[in-house]
Length: 232
Image (cartoon, rainbow, N blue to C red; front, side):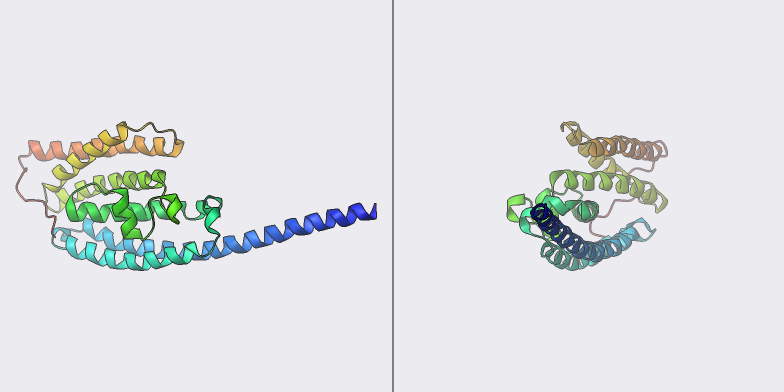
């Protein structure tokens, strides 16, 4: 009996060591993620300037300033990567999943504002300073990248409305064309992920919202009265 108790104690001592080490790792990850999310909020605050009346003259500046802030994001990701064993990425990935979706959205927004085009996964990871493929280390999963694009659609639908308020009547036309193309792309996907499928339903409403803005511009005869500025 005594031997059995000793063996049991040793087994549970090992369990406790594992749990303590795991909690220590998670605490380090939480600290790193908090720092990452703080910078993410600062970038988001900066890019909210696109919704101001004078934004068409400041887009370039806002994008440039945001890209500079992403340098800190790259450093934060490197620090985060050092907090856990490389082969346990998915064990802890829930800690940074939402944060990486938001940063993917912000990077995609910058690329749209600069070029009017859809960001590729490679372009986004370059801005974030991480990888596309999981075998290369810290990376962005495809589903998180797609979540970022759906957040982009929602932000652009809001920008379309605010552009009209600012007197820029071509920006909504550009956004409408972009969102229709994005919607067509998502229609090609077989979405098994419940979260993504629900978010995709939101894209339909974003498209409809922007189409209503474009229709209003059209019937008021305001098309082409002011070109949308890509260069700020």
